[in-house]
Image (cartoon, rainbow, N blue to C red; front, side, top):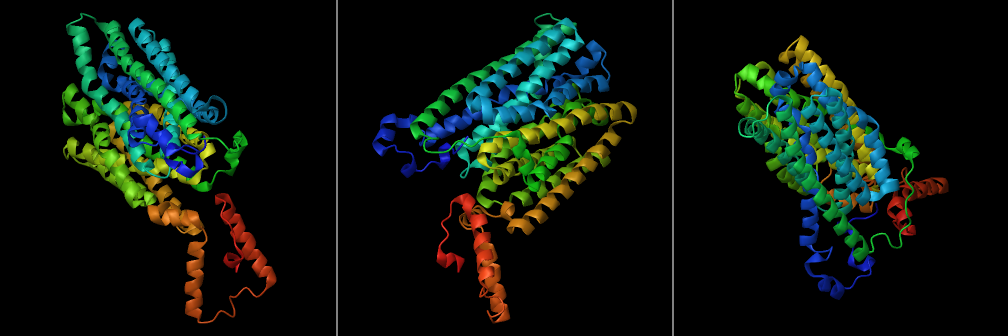
Length: 509
């Protein structure tokens, strides 16, 4: 996975302008082609996100019809996450080294659709182990599909509109979750009252209808694969490039900052997904809302993010400062959960605030991985991040259910607040480490980052010049010692060689 549609320059791909014009709007260099691809990338995740929160939208019906406790109900989310502690990472590695992005995406989307059908069958037959198996298979496919979606985004848009693209992907995914919460209760009522189904059969039919969204996403995956194949051939994307070999052992060389970013993916999302999965009954109990109103409030995190994520993505693309936005979004989430825990401020206000904070974090956090990991390892790195996230969600889904059954929802909110504080401390650590190692590369503006990529030693040179000016003499700091000159030369070579910069004698001097 080397180079993207956005990264290709006319001089390096051997296609003439006349040939591109002959292709018309279907030229991979044209904006309409790229943004049609973006629309398909967004829609490929719609079905999985719609079906992921099907149990949350029907929570009280699962309790009433199947007699589930909150802890047992939480297993439907936990079993989704457990396999991806390992398989999500493996899925990312397979994308990089075995399947390739196109076939890998098709395989993962197929697993997602099959998993939803098994889950619906188990619900229809009132067989709990079959429901669990369906959620297991669904999780294997959906989380690896998310890795493929991120890899597609970087492949096509790295270096130009990547933050915006991540924002749009999150937006469309959350449209799926929002639509789920808004219409599943109505679909259940229609299936029960109009079609005459009842009990387990009613829930089963509703879940089968939900699987249609996964079938639509499968069509998008197939069309996107054809477009990417055309782009690869038209742009001669991999011609003249040595294929990078991806090994599992490369993981040990990942930078510490990557692991801290992955840890935020764990700590922060614990306060989002488990909360939403249990939020409907929480709003019904604390604020005395009707089921449909509780679903609407609960879906606000996703509906707000559907609108705000693209806007925040564009903001981060223009301003940069990714780490700063991450910190501000975590602080906003702390305030929102604090209001939910300790006040009776309108839940609509709290959830809008949480939705805005969540949108800002997703638009600024996930692109950080592409800034610290080489392109040929992105599938593996995104897989690791989501695998760790699923480990956290798998454990906390069970813990959250047990907390609610034993201590109630106030203790659950305190649990979420603790994890948000952990994510805030981690984000501050990233800021400090990045400032010390690169002069703040991850928190630079796009222009500053481009300049740094061209010459990583420019900040050091500037600081050295300032120091020389302050001292007023170059006698103590000049490189008269030949060994010192050689050391400086080696240092510059080590930093500049990855970007194939030509080191001249004048630069060394």
